[in-house]
Amino acid sequence: MSLHTALGRRKYLTPDERARFIATASRQPPETLTLCLILAYTGCRLSEALALTHADLDQAGGIVSLHCLKKRRTGIVRDVPVPEGVMAILDFVHDLEPSERRLWPFKRSTAWQRIKTVMREAGVSASAASPKGLRHAFGVHALRSGVPLTLLQRWLGHASLSTTAIYADVLGAEEREIAARMW
Image 1 (cartoon, one colour):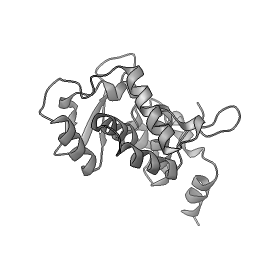
Image 2 (cartoon, rainbow, N blue to C red; image 1 turned 60 degrees about the vertical axis):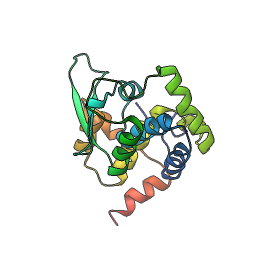
Image 3 (tube, one colour; image 1 turned 90 degrees about the horizontal axis):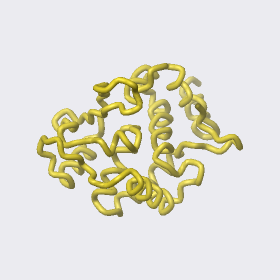
């Protein structure tokens, strides 16, 4: 696994692209906005976001409980904290009464197209313009923010720390910012 294509292009959003993505999402229909926010602030996979139900959101604690769908065993859940504002928007748009009702009624292909549309409108570079690019951006952003690698591993649901360590493989401004913390 790598954060770069075979041609060396980034597969993750830069901090500026991430900010533009979130700003652009705020001008979309409410259900698209909330999907974008969940992807950007939890680092979950698109299928994990689409599987979320009202019961998976702890409003008081500001926690999103993601069911790991990539594992061979079922029932593996990871809790990821989100900013208060995100939970408030989710509550406003989806009326979060505990239930097993899914937050987004649409299929994966529809969700993918909505994310791609927001990415295009936000001017996100082609190699990073995908839900996976948001997952990678979450990992890079967490590492840049000083989140311990082991905590990031848990939030992303990685079995191996070496998988999570790819988020240290950044280039350019992100690499310089990480290096500056040790100077």
